[in-house]
Length: 136
Image (cartoon, rainbow, N blue to C red):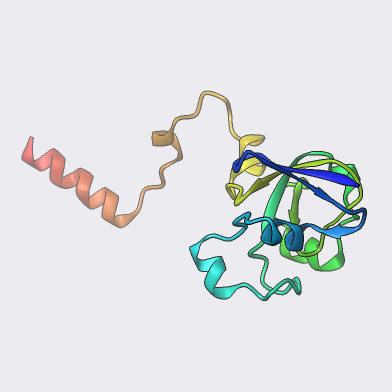
């Protein structure tokens, strides 16, 4: 038996060894999908990539990443999995609907960067800045 803890939902469930993470989440009322994911998910066949979860603890207790996951999650941290492809073999802690930027950018950005530093200049923002300067 394996315990699956869903951190955001503050819910812990028990699953049989080898249980599919997506199936157990849905069976227990855990919402894995964003709004668009609810409309476009493939039903658990690994084709859409909308059931992404972040494994906070216990990643070693899941089946290895599949070839499908390697393709779909190549820009995500190694702790991210497709719930439909992950089989549970021991206790895990799961974060549903993880932020895409979470670890991959956090590691590459300096700790002192601010949101203003991250903003990219676009023609619209440059035009707005010029308008503000003219009105001053």
